[in-house]
Length: 128
Image (cartoon, rainbow, N blue to C red; front, side, top):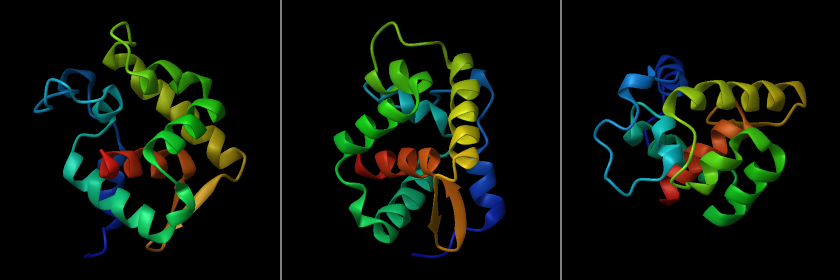
C-alpha cells in the first residue's frame, strides 16, 4: 500500500459540507459512511489501521467500543431510520475526536497519529 500523504489524510477526515453527505453512496450504505467525502481513501486508511492494529477486532467489536466511548455517536452507529441529519454528524465526530485527543486515546498508523475514533471509523469502512 502506498503511504497516505498528510494532506490527503486531512482532506479525507475533514467532513464534507452537509449537502454532499451521502452523494454516490449505495442506498443501503451505513449512516456512518456519510462522514467521509472519499470512501476509497477511508478504506485505504482503514486497511492500514487494521494492519497496524490487528487487535481492534471485528466490525461489531469496533462499533460497540465507539458506542461505549462516545454517546454522541450512538444514533449514528445504530443506523436507525430516525438517525440524526447529516448536519449533526460533523459536530458529533468533532466532539469524539477532541475527547480522544484530550484523553490520549490515539493510534499511530503509518507514522500519523489519529484519534482512536477516526481510526476505528476508517477501519469500519474497510470492513464493510
